[in-house]
Image (cartoon, rainbow, N blue to C red; front, side):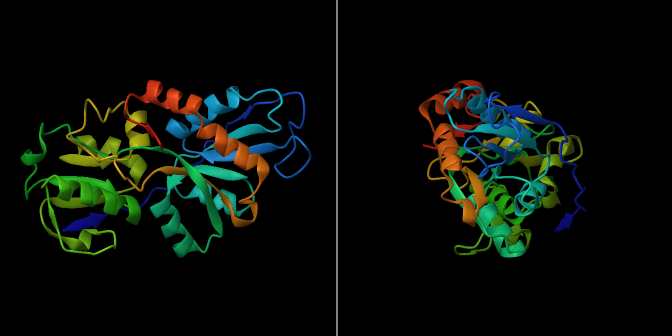
Length: 272
């Protein structure tokens, strides 16, 4: 069985950080003038931290600057991009993007991958996956792409069994045996650990809650051939924008990869 809890509307953080070039183009939007300011919507951790590192390292002749706009949920960054309030966003993986495009009719384009955040199973109640039985309660993300990803992690570690769904991501209706599954908004999952037996937590929210996939997780998603790398995304009409292309190159650079490896100790992995 499962139950779905109503999503609390999360508020976008109002503070934005103006980064990069201060001498020219500070008030211009992308596509306007020779030195545009790119407004990029991000989750605070690790996306905002990675982007800030890139923005702080921009050379004086980069030709653009970056303004970081932080959001605390997975809905508003795409809404803001659709509304024209952002030039791009950096918070989501391809399966989630595909789901949102289908559900909301967005005309978005993924420019390229930057990093992967492995999902982890965490608990304050048990010390091993095999301690979770039929009478246990496990919380998972309530969006279909991350929820299916969480269920697959649980199945891979023998915690529950799933019906064969072919190429389709599993849902809670596909669980044939195992613990009770509770669906929560992803941001709430770390806070739920005191109320449930275990929770599958997205990497960015694990980092914010000081949870380490390497040291604290009972089980961690395999990074090999993982389709859930986080992307730089823009609108389809901006897919060839030269300044966004330059930003992607900076996000995918060896310097950024080194920063990710040193900063996050396996909790975040550069897309290679």
